[in-house]
Image (tube, rainbow, N blue to C red; front, side, top):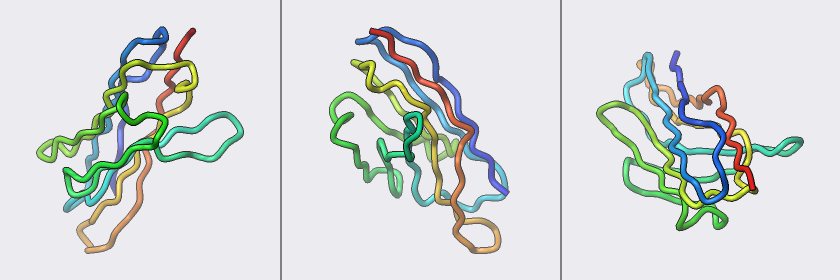
Length: 120
């Protein structure tokens, strides 16, 4: 089993910044890919940003230039630095990881979700 623990959500005014963190722990051999998703009420989760093999990043068009995804491989921790936040960024943010476990299998895990609220 692997656990993903998120931290860093909260309330911020428009134009402000927040940083989300996601730490992976447990019976993992390696983390192949990680990503951040967000979910608006009544909608499915949408990909915000992803990072594969530590340095190959991808962003949704709506956050490009404002959000930066990064990863500390030594700590198995991923970050999402969010600047110039807008009210439309208000959502629950979830981290995701594709993990190789001790049995050699690949498994998907999700964090518990972090509320990000941007006031206008």
